[in-house]
Image (cartoon, rainbow, N blue to C red; front, side, top):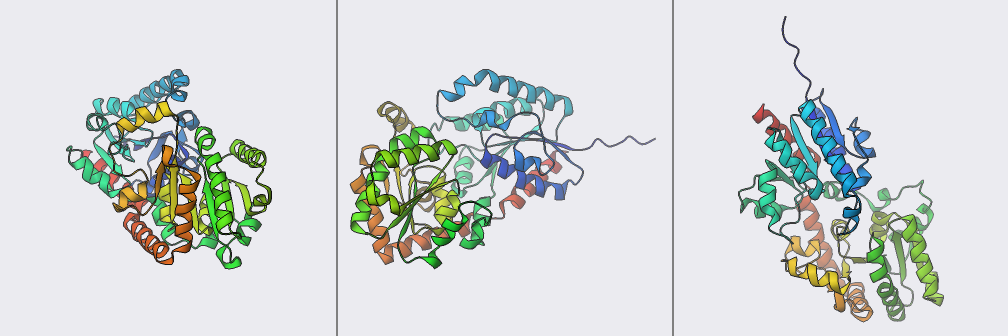
Length: 399
């Protein structure tokens, strides 16, 4: 009697909403290569919709900063131990950690030592800061799937195997129409439709002070003052602020009322969520430095970036950063298409002046749009398909 072949099991751990999206796309394409495979580990609703079995709460990993992860350390260590022992028992064909490197790389290292093929999807930003972590990556994983082209070039300098797969968001936005991005069932749909470029003649600026309360606390007062200055220069200008959460929506509304913006209030619209839609219908974006800058670039939106943190935090982090630019679009294009204003340079006058120039200098605006359109085409590599094909080839080469 012939021995029954053991069904393939693929272990994946994603720790944030962005990782859940990447994981869902990866699973859907891996099923083409391995139709009977089982997918298990840690993920969110989108991965679960692809038949993924999650062994814990992905939200535990969705923490930022230095202090918050320490508060959850016992839970995080317990979860990682649980996943490790489960994976050892079931023997996956591959372990794939999606982003969340502080959680995933130590787990990947243990899996690799146990003889399991190990991949990291999304390269840790070692090219930007804490470059010493590159040695950790080499020790922990067999292969890295990178979203950005220069990451593959960087890793090759340290003899780390990697594949540039592109960015799924670039694939999505390259073919999207602005109107297609607006969910007609959303409560904000009438407002977003009214502010669509087809239905207005006034300038519209999307204002995004950050997704974390600490960011918003630092930048919102500066951004409100910036809006005051812009409306003096362009009286009919309008602003839309997509709040990243219910809590931040209330916080932004409260601060606007406390700032006593007067008639300016009629020109400011605050919505809950919908950041991609708000950027898509706007002429320019004023935002905190972060991953949203790449999203704005992929939407071909000229932008102005600001960032401010406590003096103590800035003193520490500025010593660790080793890049010429802060905004991802500038890093990718190697050109300062995005005006950056960091720490003390982030003043209302400076931000308003930079935005005013983008809104009134047609040649500069078009030059920026063309640079971002070219960037979107560069990053559009059919990422889900390319990532799955790379993983499938690695599995087949080791089995």
